Length: 304
Image (tube, rainbow, N blue to C red; front, side, top):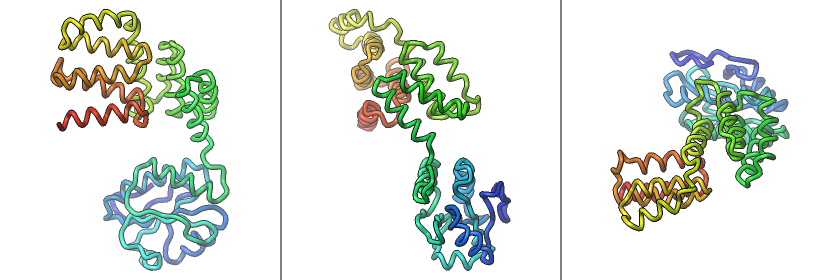
């Protein structure tokens, strides 16, 4: 792992190692003919390097030996950095068959690093991340209402890796789609306690909370509508109507009612409408069209 206090990093495995000016040819150029080599140009004084380095190591280790990571301390080995025309660090280059094929500058999110590694494996003719492909397929099925088919894929992933957070979240949401909140909670409890803040786990928990909150509410839609007809500023009735509409599967309608409360009185009940909207967005997921539209409208109201 990287020694953040200074000096050179200590290799954490046979796929992560230090490279110098003297060993660059054999450890990177020649070695990249066997498998892709990622080169991380760093220095002990570089702040962003302290973030990027561990993230790169994590992604490379997760690749199971399909790629390797060579770390170059530019203070100790300046010649290679000069030859690669490295102007600033962190700088990352990928080599296949002795040639640089890709790279990026600066610290980037873990998701982008993961994509970078996966693309490198595919470019080298590797398998890529089959689990990620399976998870994407399962999510698509779940989004289309095929919860049973999605559950089979999530289950297969969990057999291979019982700690896979996206699979845990997905399986919990499959149970929830079938109205089984109890088993959804049991599945969600499989997630490690220190991963409770992971977006996938947060989304599943929010979905379970909303399902329990809206249970039986759909039966009272007409009651809440009548109250609003009598008093359009009855925010409690509108809030309950939002939950009732959510219970019937009308997600857009639920968001619209909550946005209307926020528009009329954003401070009502300690900003309850905004709080509930954010919970809905968590449950729907960050890329869901209802989330994207709802967030835009909420943001425009906040800064109006």
